[in-house]
Length: 228
Image 1 (cartoon, rainbow, N blue to C red):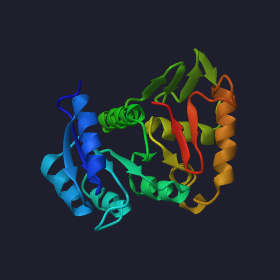
Image 2 (cartoon, rainbow, N blue to C red):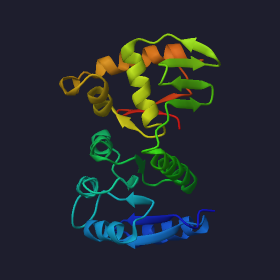
Image 3 (cartoon, rainbow, N blue to C red):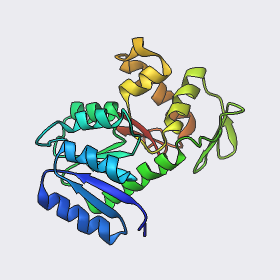
């Protein structure tokens, strides 16, 4: 399927690496294995992969530190695979630069789907279009017009900025902190009520059923994702 795409798997558990090598290889991915954070960083530098699958519990350094070091010189998509289920662990990883987070155990089908989203987002980086179309949602950033099913939607400036930030990273989980900093500024990083109110208002305007959103999805305790 994707025989030209390379994935670096950074995990100290050999059975996990073997499972991923077999599963991803069956779907056409070339897999490079690393058993520690240092090995993973070297593998990324040597092989220039298209995507990284990273465990957080590594023997030499925490996976979050690997992400921080990596983001100093690479924007390669990182999908975290970890047994850590706490919201704060997910937030730390995402705020440090991870693109997505899956809790072990996970299904291969879901992993492949998350990988595809991260790869699509990476391929769009640096080629940002003023026009975003997701199903029946259309965001024309040049004209500052948002429409659903061809009907223009009236948004407040804050709602518009929030939707554009989500659209800029469509498919990626954006933490509460990221969105608050991007839309309101650093002084508002803890004002999550502002975010909840504006997300609620956005859903009322663009979703057919705000209680069952199809565009703006909630990552409980972590943030929000605009479908990509």
